[in-house]
Image (tube, rainbow, N blue to C red):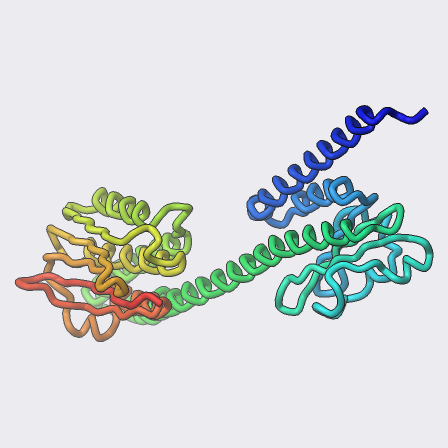
Length: 371
């Protein structure tokens, strides 16, 4: 017996309502995917859960995602149900062919496997494979293509962010290696030479005064090395940690205020979006190194920290003190971390200058034009 028209309308409306609910669930999962991939680094759980929603959203039976790796594919989803599709072993040849197409080999066996190509940039692609009980219609092709493009955008952004993080980590390791070589390693060599000399002196008679002087020198050098290692560890751990530059600077001033008797003044007139993330971290590192030098060497009473935007394009950062100043030979040789500060400045296209204050003191100036 045929259902009456109102009854058929009820079921049609109910089916559309469920379809809309599934689509909204998919969209919500897609919006959360980038965050979940970052929070669960190395885990396939976010993608596995997303693939579990796909068959219901697109009207298919199974879904399989093939991600490229150094040799072959890494398969996620319904591996067992779709693993025998011959196209799964193909590389896809970059962007050749349509973004969504039926596997022709499976089609000859009356199996309907829709393969969607996901461009991941750098001539790499992933494959999204969907199994259907019957030949999918044009609307299914269109919807699958839209889903594939959306998923490709998220995966592409995730892979690019991961590559950027790897490059940044490699760069930081390079800087740390240079710092270790130029500070700790050189002083260890010096200590080794002095220790050998001390051993020879002790073996001689009437050399107690000379030996005592060398022991004092060794102790002082070890103290310097200990401080340098602690600073390198602190530098390696330093991140913005989700803070704005303004918040990080305020925390830095508070930290150095506790560590010294100096009076610090912070005048930050930069907006939160004035600098990029890389520039923010480098500026913070330079400022911290400048403040550390002031606290250790300047005997200053007052320290002024200023960040200004000049002429709408020039960034001017200064750390000025009223201390004893830096000797000319030290500035030339790059002691007290000045050389590392210059390297950090160069990394963001900035110039770092050491200026004399009047009537006394030193000003570290960082200046560059935004791109």
